[in-house]
Amino acid sequence: MQSINEQRQQGGQQRDWDKVRTQTDMPIITIITSTYNVARDLHWTINSINNQTYPNVQWIVADGASDDGTVELLKQHSDVIDYWFSEPDTGIYDAWNKALQHVKGDWVQFIGAGDELYETNTLEKVASYLKDAYPKYELVYGQVMHISEKGRKELYVSGESWERYQGKWEGNRPRLPPHPAIFHNKNMFIKQQFDTGFKIVSDSHFLLQNLDKSFLYVPFIINLMPLGGISATISGIIASYEELNDAVKKLSIKIPLSIKVKGYMRYQVSKQGVKLLSEERYVRLLDFVKGLRGKPKAFTEN
Image (cartoon, rainbow, N blue to C red; front, side, top):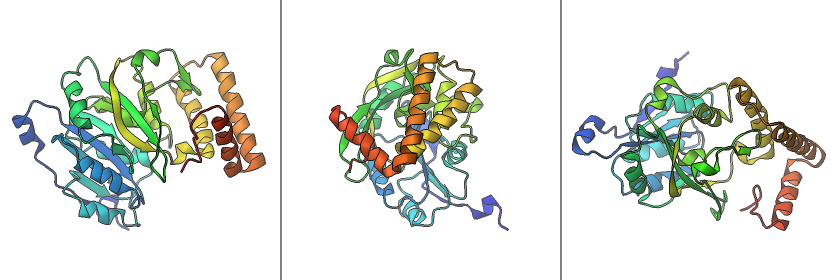
């Protein structure tokens, strides 16, 4: 039986980043993307990163042994990807942790396959903030434009000033900035990586351990993120609630009673709604109610 290392395929341009550092005082930004059978959507991300005006970008792709043509795409675009590898993993956070071993940048961003940086000069704009952010700030973030999965229609923007997150709750955890729009200083990963015991909320668990730090907010959209994936399904939201309960308990975060009761009621209503109506009918009902309230659909927008 082959070992994991023997199963690994790999490639990429692998620039000499030590040499780059001697030629500029601007930060190197590492982008990490985990992939698994995403050949249909990955081209959006490839084109977006390829079109960036900022030159100091290291893109690492951690693929989980895809068999749908994703690996062939990675090979074709090795001029855009600094380093890619493909081998079995246990999920997105295992893939991220593996990718972190190859980081050469000063700041690290995690985006999904199918995500796009909002403008061609997005990283150039962000870099001007990152240049002098550390050591005062280890986390710098902006906004995310959420778009529909199929039609890529712009739906709504998330992300606002750090002050507006203070003391606020979202479900059963303290409110956090949108993770794809966050740039983490590389030094954070010396002592801390993603807990692979969580399959859905390890990014939240990671950030919850750093709430004592100040987050620097940059007031513009960083990337486009399609609705989809497990976090955009009712079953995923139910599973996220259960994992987050474990995460906040593990971190000894005390949930206010009113928040705890409200979250538990929503959790039970969702579970019973799916049980009675089926998930497909229940999300249609939820989006119908959202429409009546003048809010964008969360599950059924094309």
